[in-house]
Length: 202
Image 1 (cartoon, helix red, strand yellow):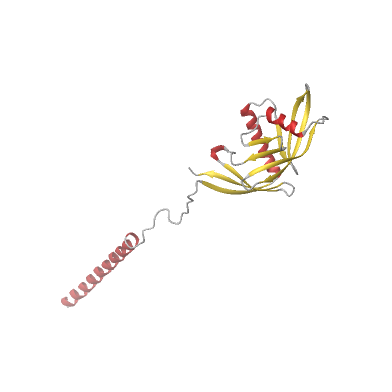
Image 2 (spheres, rainbow, N blue to C red):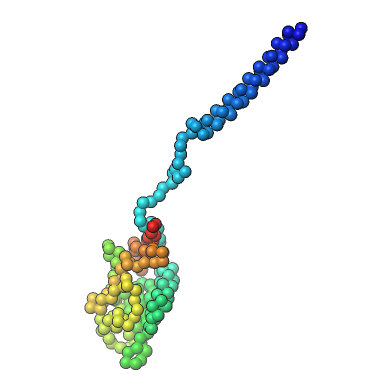
């Protein structure tokens, strides 16, 4: 009778030890699966990083929004340059330049309309199509020469009085933080304006 009880005790003892062994083996397998057998995945796996010096952000806009941006830019530029004569530029069906000047000691309103075209090299060419200088019948080349000599203009703006054109070299335009702008489409009559903002990565 005593031997039967000893056998029963040993059975439960070995069963318990077997259970403990299974639990330990299970934890050991889980540990090895996580830390030993799992693939070595780098922390930045799946992250795509551009190798370009400038990151591009295409933008679609309209004349109303761009006019607000132009006004803000001109205000800051003229304040920085401490310009004696202020002028205004805005977009309608044409690019419109307006200012007040003095001719023969009298204040005269100047208004010049330009038709813009976009060259492949990114330069915007403004061709003069209409002009009003008060009631004075002045030649276009004379007025544009006056504007070139009397008004503070950004270094990316070139006036050619003889050709009656203004060239906007957008490649020279630099915004805060070294950002640049590339014009992709410029159709004022259809209000189709798109450009790409180029942001430096270094």
